[in-house]
Image (cartoon, rainbow, N blue to C red; front, side, top):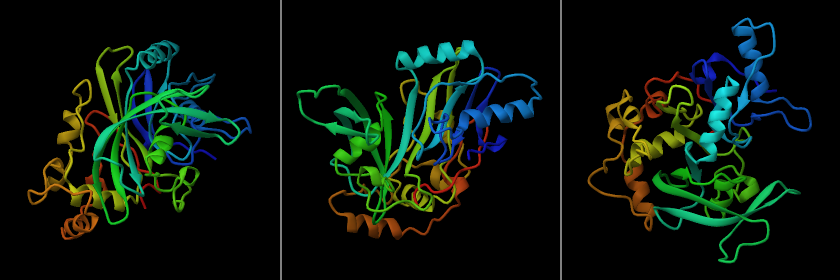
Length: 313
């Protein structure tokens, strides 16, 4: 059963709400009758605001059930129409963090595949053939390595298209399945049944105020592996300015001086993806172990949300 509380709200005004979804929650109710986040939020608003009638809540976009992180909902029909138009124009910028079991072919790059969805297995297949297959759709994303440990690697991903299971299928095709994602080739499941894919940040122009809005979702609680990767490896700039340059808040809102300059190399040395052992020695020789609350700052101006469990264990 999906639950929701005020602690899950990242941003809210009269027109929209951005929430931090837990891995395992549905965004919308399914055909089997299981309720989703949409219904839980409606019930929460009805009780909080003492609304006697129906509560309007529009689903702007969805993320997969085993995925955690930021999801946008519209609180008015006007906001929903305008947000749908923003998505149609490709102006909802979505940034993800993903932990993989293997290295990608390059430290950063753009992936382009043709994806075919198999409705029988609820799985998508990514193809690199220059001749698109029947019923396939082009899928594009940008990725960049943020760091790694002895067994896992953290990447930042920007979606350029929105296809079914896109990141999961494309990373699997490249030989780097997402941690916990058994459906796409992971070796073992995560403890909570979720996968290590997190909708880290959404950026768009507010549909009514016409002002840039960036909302960042803290990663789930207990994500000590990710914390070690980011703080100790620290070789790549975590915060990407994006198309609107709204990331200044992300850069300055950490309480830990060791995290504030995450783009700097440790010891003047960049990681070598061809020598994981050297990277591991360097990674685990640094004694810094700040708490999770210092690792994942929320963008200024947004509401803090309680992290959820299971990501990156």
